[in-house]
Image 1 (cartoon, rainbow, N blue to C red):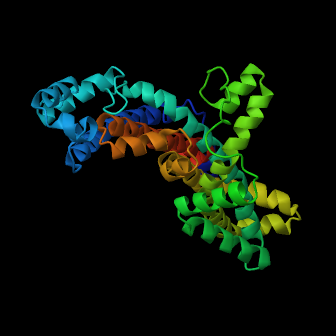
Image 2: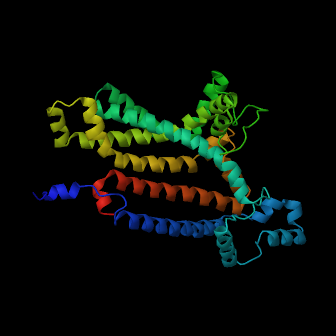
Image 3: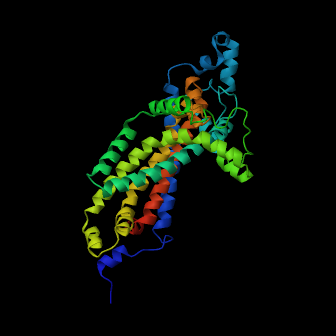
Length: 357
């Protein structure tokens, strides 16, 4: 018997089929083009920033000496025309060279390698907390629609979305460090603490690899409060999106049919409601992770967390153009990579999108 048309539409094809591989190649090429587009936009913006990077880095006394200014401009290529500076930057970028920081006088790649793991560590913990708490609260809110738990969760999620990150960070630090004494303080380890041998740059992971559980507990205790503060906004967003997605699906006929068959409510929610809602939830989770990396500047400064946010702040204050460009490239690459991962997950989860790839 020939299958009906509906069966043909929902029949899964292997991921290695003719449609999936070309889709991956197209998305990779598009991502590469986007990265180079970001280099042009970021470079153009740095040229429009008011202020003189030479004066900001040399100081007033040295800036008044033409010879020192000329030597500084020649050393960092600032004496070349803007198009030549851009071509030189792109050429060096293809070789993995982000240039030399005007403030630290070190290669920007080395600075990013030093600062990025701290931001990645706090962002990973924050997005993990946001996913667990946001999904749980969103499911509870949808299942108890318009009842007391739903109303409480909606107020909580709206508050989390509305509160500025710097205000939340300052309030949390004051309450849990100064008043209650529950938080250990600022930084990644206590003063004089010895970091674990570097493998990944993430202190918690490196401490586990080295078997140093004392350093792991210490690093995790310093990490927890800033990660929670950073996760509050993402929890609010994920809760609201999970609730909205599930409420849209809960009204479908096949959900009512599943309940009429006597299926347990847990099975109905997880299999027939939550799984179709994952598409929109994955999108929000990917954007949330990218925004956590990009939006950690104020939180890191409040907690003196030596991550990419602090480096970006110092680069902006000192008009360190190579440093600003390096941070922009990292953030843009994270956004583009997360979008690529989300698109791939779409094709894996949804058979119809996979067949149309």
